[in-house]
Length: 260
Ligand SMILES: Cc1cc2nc3c(=O)[nH]c(=O)nc-3n(C[C@H](O)[C@H](O)[C@H](O)COP(=O)(O)OP(=O)(O)OC[C@H]3O[C@@H](n4cnc5c(N)ncnc54)[C@H](O)[C@@H]3O)c2cc1C
Image 1: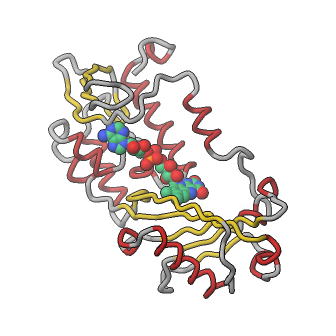
Image 2 (image 1 turned 30 degrees about the horizontal axis):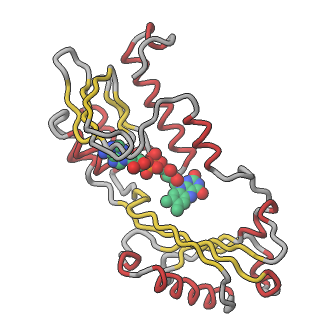
Image 3 (image 1 turned 90 degrees about the vertical axis):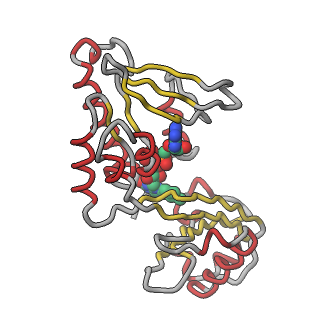
């Protein structure tokens, strides 16, 4: 089996996508209004980086936010879309990177593989573990073996009630149970991803289609809450949104005119 990734990490993709663009982070959009001439006025909240709150007008808007956030902003712009988009729940997850003494971990048979998945039928906070040092040769280290554990899944609210120490203890207990890994890690990094994974439940496609039909021209949706969780699905969703915007703006803009 072979896997491919970026040696410097997935952040390479983000940097490449962002290159040359005017991007404002830490600047939440608080309101979207339609102007009399069919454009969109966005109110962007005050932030440490950008200073005071700001209002700017655009020819078109791609709303690339989680469904419930989009629903809140679209209130007043489309009668049905907010109710339809606000129905997608999101799961809390956390990832833990654990660094073990290499010689201890490599003696365990499980680490010949690249990881484990734990089915939802098993009562476990651990959802998956990736044996990073086996999976990715470029992470090779003379003394340490890296393992990434994923915890939390849809409908499991236990993560929010655990501080980092308790979370690490629970995950270590699950690793001991499933693969016999008893050793104490030398280093642990905990990364929480609250409300990160949208759950596209039965009826999602019908609700999404109805929401898209309800949106005013020049306003479109993109992202994991709409066209599927995962980077490949998000890229497809972004292409669709770009096509919508270019169609709305017409041929002059498509050839490099005003940018939305
Ligand atoms: C732990 C984890 C591991 C994953 N692993 C993989 C993997 O191996 N392979 C894979 O294909 N996918 C993976 N995914 C899924 C993939 O990362 C996501 O589906 C994808 O990044 C979602 O992108 P998005 O742009 O739709 O949403 P997000 O990345 O959530 O972006 C939404 C953005 O909207 C911003 N926002 C919210 N409200 C406002 C507002 N009012 N104004 C302005 N901005 C706002 C948020 O700050 C956020 O930056 C993983 C996800 C997680 C959480």
